[in-house]
Amino acid sequence: MTQCMAINPDKTKVMVFGAKDDEVCIKVKDTVLENVKSYKYLGVILDQQLDFTMHVDYSVSKAKRAGAKVSSLIVGRNGLPVQIGIELYKSLVRPHLEYAIPAWANISDKDLDKLEAAQVQCLKRVLGAKAHSSSAAVEVISGIMPVRFRKRELCCREYMRIITKENGHEIINLLASSTRVGLKFCPLEYIKVMSKELDRAISGSNLVKPEIAFFGNQLVTASDCFSVLGTDSITINTGSTNDDAKVVDVGRLIVECQGKNIVIFTDGSVCEGSVGSGACAAVLFSKSDDGDVWIQTAAVGTRVSAFECEVEGVGLGIRMAIHTKVAVT
Image 1 (cartoon, rainbow, N blue to C red):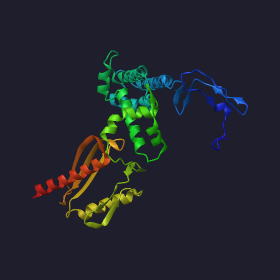
Image 2 (cartoon, helix red, strand yellow):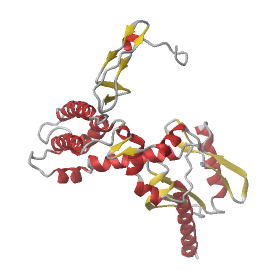
Image 3 (cartoon, helix red, strand yellow):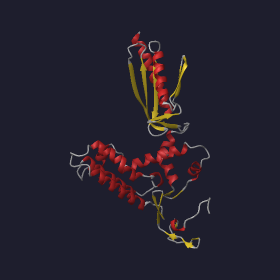
Image 4 (tube, rainbow, N blue to C red):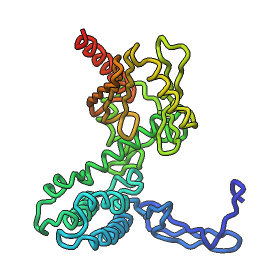
């Protein structure tokens, strides 16, 4: 028994990692465990050298099979629309190529070329491009990032996910103690190397992991709770599980302030993480009774926090209020 879990000898294998092709004899309940040279664990094929060549070949074969199914929907240019084909590629094919890629991102250039070739082959079919078409042109037209850049992006996302965990977390300690020998990287060390530029960009920033919850089809953050200045009787909590109550509260706020005050709703967010490409928006309900509504949006930056986007949204709302007042005057 290990941690209250019984070992099943029939499902347990032995694999020795390293340069030496040795085998060891381990018995469990008088049963000799089988020595293997590779093993699929949680969807990733591990090999003795940890170069993940076998896993790359496995991923490419699965991606090509999925790509063939997508391509079967396209007959000349009369079949599936190109944009839908690209969305199907992102949903059905690309996940096979980049599943758990931060764990095996330190692959060789030769294996990386296999992933690139599989992606370009599928995109050419979706776009109806000729076989000799430029790979770079195909990726630009389709709006799909090359695998080598996509790999770096996913490593940076994983790095952000790790460093926003609480202090003392086991994976935080592993990241700090990870090492490499020559060009042999352990996964966490490789993630750290790939994220050096990002780490320099966010140096000195206080990163906060956003707490989120799903209510119906809406994504609500912990900061989605606000009060209205000068209106003590109304506090709106958009994090409430009661969707009807949220609609009533907002509607009551607009009715109470309409004709008396300018009502401005602002928001800012970052795409897929706590730091990244961010934007903000502001919606202004006018003081008049005719119900005029002004909406403005603005891009904030490519490496900004959600807090910066929120602040920019407030600033955008203030500028809209000043502009409205000047226009009325």
